[in-house]
Amino acid sequence: MDEQRRQKRQTRTADAYLELTLADEEGDFIQKVIACETVDLSASGLKLYMSEPVEQGLITDILVELTGEVERYFLTAELKWIAPGGDDGWYFAGFEIFAGDNTDYQAWADRVARKPAPHRQDGD
Image (cartoon, rainbow, N blue to C red; front, side, top):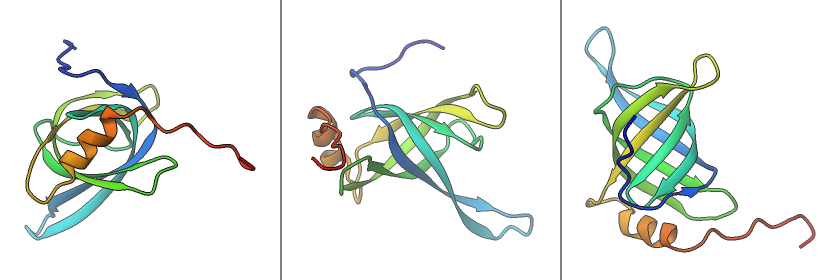
């Protein structure tokens, strides 16, 4: 897989949720959410570890919740690549994040530009 990153990435664990709109057998549309975990991130991209494959080229909404922080980021991204992970049924996937109306792209880019907050221990 060729390296196509334009920005430095942070290795960071965070919860992420893909929101998909899919057609069922009858042609009706259904909403599906896939829980994922970030592997690394930048202002314009995410590498996710996910339990289900999705089609390359898919454009989807992603909600990211950074561990230990209150903020949630609603983003729109395109799946650029997907590959089997080390565990059966798990995948690594690379997403390109788009700036857009009704997204938290600018707040996300600003947050990623700052150093991660230190993890607090109980009793700190």
